Amino acid sequence: MSIEEEIKKIEEEISKTPYNKATQAHIGRLKARLARLREERASRKSGKVISVKKSGDATVLLVGFPSVGKSTLLNKLTCAESKVADYDFTTLDIIPGVLEYNSAKIQILDIPGLIKGASLGKGMGKFILSLIRNADLILIILDKIEQSDVIENELYNAGFRLNKEPPNVKIIKKTTGGLSINAGLKLTKIDIKTIKSVLEEYKIHNADVIIREDIDVERLIDSLSKNRVYIPSITIFNKADLLTKDEMQKIKNSVDLFISAKDGFNIENLKELIWKRIGFVRIYMKKIGKEP
Image (cartoon, rainbow, N blue to C red):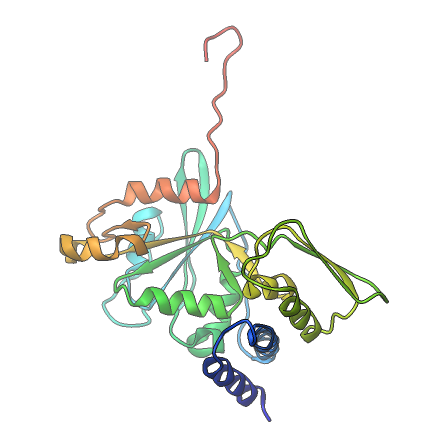
């Protein structure tokens, strides 16, 4: 059985198995096996992998479907000149620019569009995802709200965890003694049997496991996986000038900011949000003998 066939079989079994106390450990093991197989598949996929030399104080990548306005936005945020056209796959190369804001120099990269199936290697997927792994911030650009789920799913399946901290789980492997689970708080989303099932799927049979957060099975698997990337992100909706107020109201909880790259609407607010989300802090210097 090929990896693809095994993955499909496990996905079908998970979808058909009702989740309850009796099946929790079994489903946990299946999810762990699925995560391992996806990692193995990703490592086998051939494709162009590249890293871009970082410059400035931080690097931000523009991530979105082809022709959502990434090139126009890059030109508004920086002094770069990215050629723009109204057809799909406009950006075939990496176009860099520099945003200078609050004394910080932030490298902005316009990369080829991300499409459904990118985590499987479709549409230059491996190339694009390898670029994203080196970013300090992902700026997700939408011009249709249904694009949000597709992009987030592709990034999730590729091991990206947006706006999250790594699980507060420590695993100390031993040669003997079995599994010792030590939780510093009450676990409400996973039981000890499921934890042991997941660990055994990862061939961990002897270890001290210290848990300091109320994890679920996905967070436990994340703590065991090698390809996870924890990175801040901003989601913006471009071409906001084409939306009605009612449409904005319906989707406002799914985006951080509405903009129009073409008209310059909310671009200054976006610069401020980028600066804050990266984690820059203003420092005010007081001259000797002067009031601050």
